[in-house]
Image 1 (cartoon, rainbow, N blue to C red):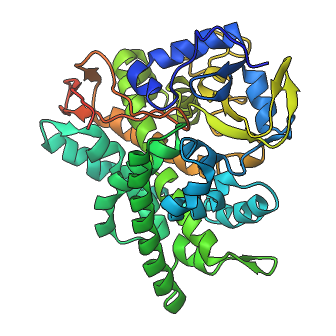
Image 2: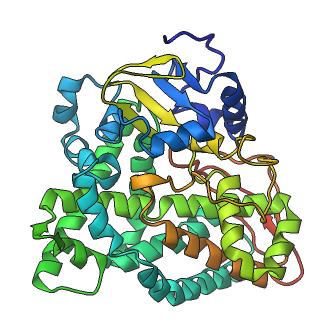
Length: 427
């Protein structure tokens, strides 16, 4: 049955932006009120308990599928027979990105992408990341006030993914527009036609870039990810041109956006936890545990969407074929059934069961790269500076409920023994 009192019915597009971190509190309350809740406003089921989210990721409920979820959520307000006519690029390529596929397509794509982000590959690029971090922090020292999101936390992972792909640096100026437009529609339910139109334009521009770079690599291969994808084959099957464009779209956006926002949110969290800053200084050998706990604490991954492929029952609720189901990762990672003092920051915590990167066959391909980038940045920052002080009352979030919550942070770095000052605003 889809009956409820409407207490937790919020718009999963605008709601998180309007509520800020209060959205997390609402998820916590919902987790204790009803673990499988029908949000009538969002036309979506919300799953909030850790065990249920883990079961879904691990296919205990095989009806829950990734296939078709992006188009279903992005264009939920657009009649199905109008979608491909109005938005041909998104309609064609969103179903082909790796996060929107299931086996056997997903299996093949995952094997190919995993070759680019092995532990060895991540370690090979670590020195480049360290140098980029030093460069960004030097600029921070020289400027009395900078915008942190756009001048520090976005350039770092953006530079890294462009370097790995082999995309010319002059294209970096387009990244913010591309990423914001694509993430805004793919990380919420029921985007407006204006938002989808903007994303369609950006996807077209990204495809054109991919086409140009792919043709270059076919003529003159290089040691980069675009060459690897253009020439990719597994057991005799080459990746198709359309699959190439689709993976380029997700690699450019997801390859840096979540890491960028996570760095920003961690820096904000450090302003409230000077003891954490001191711990990083004193225990650099614990950086892996530190990064894992920060990612859980700041809710790097707010949620992921699934679509029911057939009817089934879950905790007495009747899930119908075609229903959208939001796996609320943020709520799962704050579940007191699994974590002691879940709202606290504890670097000794066992995060083995964290849902941040999703367990199971859809485990994030780039998890090692993201952790390495965040770790290198934190170690360098606490070594160079002595603290951080955020001047405004709260963060401003973009309107999205899946993958992560994103904001822009204005930052003023003061070197030496003084604290950093971070006035911030949404852009």
